[in-house]
Length: 277
Image (cartoon, rainbow, N blue to C red; front, side, top):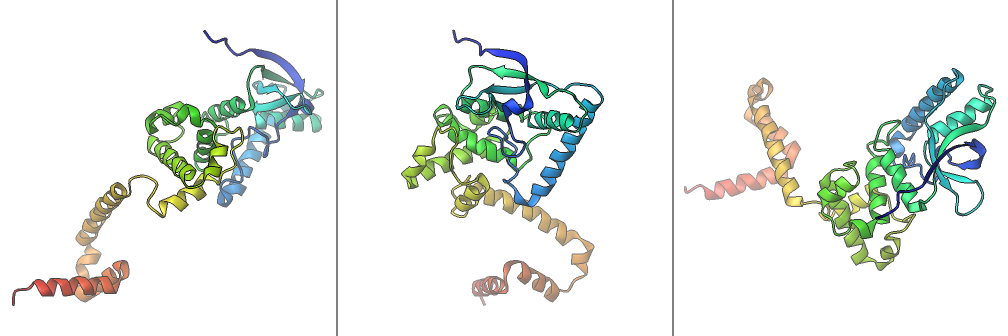
């Protein structure tokens, strides 16, 4: 029977903890993943810190932050979860709202860096300030690389369940297919499997690359779904009063804008060739 991991509740000063709000080792909310919304994410982060500082200013405390002993020297601890709380304690002290640098910590004594990253991922599936919609698949992508030996033989549904449902089973299956293809195409990627810090392109970049060749997901199934969805929209358009009022020539012009005039001409020629007279 495996031993339960050892945990110690204590206090530590914030300057003994390595856990930068934006670039900490276990900060799973990667503010560089989605450049379009980077400013929005940082604003949400700033507002969250301000709210936590206000709580501390009123004399209350925050939940313990999770840390583990730093195996490489430097700071005594590396932060696992609680980046905003750590920053709030730091700012509350610097602003004079608290006399002490100390904050409550939960020290996980037996975890490896890889296990710490997985703990951070699992902790942030719940909402404190959660990962964004773009950040969740990116962290799931890296988690699959880090824990490849544990997950490579599982189907998409079980991988999704293993990750706590943070991504859909279809996306989990897609990621697994892509990793297998990347390894088959270039053995250099094999060195990134089970790595604490896999060096691979972001999921949003890789997905576009393989989607272009129809490698992600079932292309025919997606085409069929798209056809059915668009077909229902076309039926609604045909029943609309706007469409009914148009002349036939105007309808053809609109159709040519959608599919291209050459395609319509080709279809008309094929139909005329079938006429028996």
